[in-house]
Structures are given as structure tokens and as C-alpha cells.
Length: 364
Image (cartoon, rainbow, N blue to C red):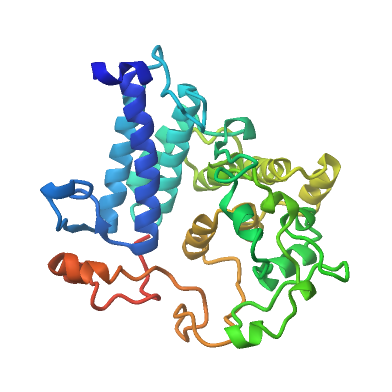
């Protein structure tokens, strides 16, 4: 402890590391289902860790987050070199509570009582409600510290907008369309047909379809750990479920979630308000608006699409993605890595590695 005291209070260093570890573990289990958790990260002491069930991992995540939050030293210095919050532990606490709320909500259909307890505690302790508290990883203007998408775009431009989202945004007259995407060579917003095979996709000239917008391609576009828009939509769901400490109605948080997304992407205030007025709260609109606000947070958008069964997505135009009953919808999970079959075979088999498929539903 003494060796590291110069880098911020020990408790704060550990709290931040633990919260980011919990964030990562949630992403892993949401992608794969059962994964090594309780026996993970032991290095040479255990090179064949057992897989934990997703239900036990989610319980463990709540415990992990609670431990991190209780370890925060409010009077001590934050971690040196903190590029997310600059050592502000009050903001790290809001991030931890927001993460706990997300964990709780994602388990709410499978373990309602535990989810309600964890979610209400998180809400009562304070979550991210404004963009000033967003947990963002900042990139810089020049290599090697520019955003990976910006770096990639310097040598290739064959990533097109999908007609799935472009058509939704166009139909709804969403002002984020011009921020998320650029017009094609003819000045129109056109998405490439979703799910084309390589040969058919190659038939479309790059200039005929929309590319990502300038904000997305910027060298300094931040990576998003957690933002106010996502948390506001979680609060809206908590209010709709009747959870305590929601701090407002579902309708209020819904509108605030859209506003936070619009503000983050630099949409004009009057355009944002007009859009909110034209799209009042409903169960269907809330699901759709959360999905749109999770742009550039692909794993989160995918996870919430699975949990909320919406919005309706286009089927794969060519071939199969292994998703729905007919294989043409987005998959429900990643398959367990084949390396595990060689390096951790017994535990891989026990976790269903030999039979897991892309459309096997996860615990939720």
C-alpha cells in the first residue's frame, strides 16, 4: 500500500479498478453467457478456471460493485492519471451506481426481487443524470492516441450506414440523422441493405451510400463507458416498474434521455425539443429511443434489443447470421472461443462449449 500511495488513495485506486473490472465482466457475460468469473484472473495459480452461471455472475457483479463503492475514500486523492474523471471520486461513485442500476435492470426479468433491491439502492445513492457526469474515454488528435475508427477511416471507407437505422431515423425525422451519418454523393441519406454477402455488397459503389458522420469519424470522438442518456432510460424503466428512488416519472426520464442524447451529439436545442414533442412516451417509443441513443455503444444496443424484444430489425438479406429460428436475425450470443476447447476442455464442455450456438438464448 505504501509503495502506491503516491498514485492516489489506495482505496480509490482499487475502487476504480474494480468498477472497470465489473463493467468488463458484465460485457463478457452478456456476450457469452457462462464465463470464468469466480476463478478468473488467477494467472498461473489456476490456468483452468471453472465457468460460472450467468445468474451467479450477475449476483457477483452486484457484490463487486458494492465493494468498490464502499471502498471509495471521499477524503483521499483520486487515482493519478485518471483520464475518465480526472480523479473525481464523486463522479466515479455515480458511475458505479449507474453500472449497478444497469446490472439490476438487465437481471430484472430473471430475478425481480434482487434486481429491485439493487436498483433502488443505486438510484438512492445517485446516478449519472447529466452529460457532465458521463464516463468517457478521451482520444487525442494524433496517432497513436486518436480514436480507432478515425485511424481506420484514413485507409478505408467501405463501412456504410445500414438501411435499418437510416430508414428509422428518416421515417421519424430524427435530427440525429445528419450527425450519425453523412449524405451520399447525391446529397441523400441512403443506407446499404443490411446483411448482404460480400459479392452483392461489392456491387454498391461506396459513394452511393451514406458514410458515418464527421462527429463519429473525429479523431477525438470519445469512447463511452456510461452516459446520461442510457441512465435516463434506465430510470424511466425503473419508474415504470414502480421502483423507489426513481426521482421522476417514466415520461420525464424518457424526455430527459432523448434530450441528453441530442445534447451529446450537438443537435440544436429547438430541433431537439420539437422532436421530443412529436414523439411522446409509450412503451414502444421508449424501447426505440433507447436503441437509437445507444449508437456507438454496439454491445449495449444489442443486449437491450435482446432483453426488450425491440425495435424490429431487418432480416439478413443474404445467407444466415444464425440468429432467429430461421437464422436470418441477429445472433443472441457469441459462441465460446475454441481455444477454450484445447486449453480448458473439461470446463468448456461443462459450460456447453461443444453445443453452444449463436441463437441459444442467454439468461435474462
